[in-house]
Image 1 (spheres, rainbow, N blue to C red):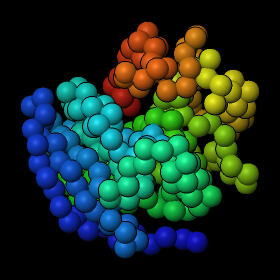
Image 2 (tube, rainbow, N blue to C red):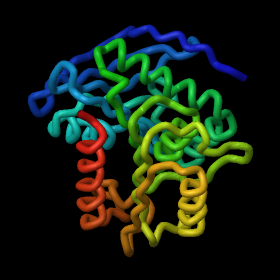
Image 3 (cartoon, rainbow, N blue to C red):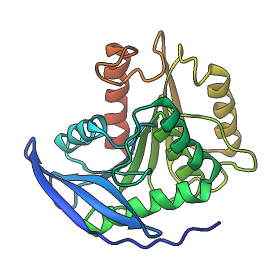
Image 4 (cartoon, one colour):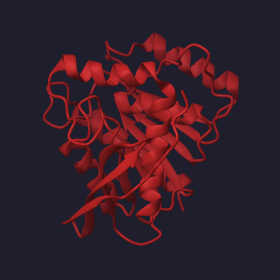
Length: 246
């Protein structure tokens, strides 16, 4: 089913974080309300679309958005689950991500809806990169395969499998994959499969592994957090943004 987009900015609750103005923004996609987070250090700053992990948009994504704003980027941390839906139980997390994995058209429409909401807030969505964490990484690769006109697509410990019937023939931007080689949820076999797929499709890409890093290695205070891999991958992401966004 194709989802038509209807974007309406309903609410913006402003806060000031690290000198940049951050806003919780409620918007609509296909008649359903979603709540993202928008932060911008300056008008016309390059733009980053940030897609959350399987627990929805939380303080973690807001912290990452703030870190990017401190570097000079406008960021919209999207919401793919719905306003107020922030699952804490594993069964609920699997339910919400599973629904989107089964409905790729809806997943794409939600990301396009977030881009439209960010554009309505003033973001330059033509000078943009998308980044995602875990589930968000899988979603960002879905956006890349859709042919979205972003300059780049980056993932941190994200899902790497390509759904049956899909490919990267329409991908227009560069791809950066940052992955833990000790990740038991997303294996190195999947990593290798994606390498071969991107190479065969002629897509500009860089795929990096971090030794000993497990799944979710960037999640602060998590039991699988690895500081070295987090710092190295964050530095590489900064360079990726600097290379692509002017």
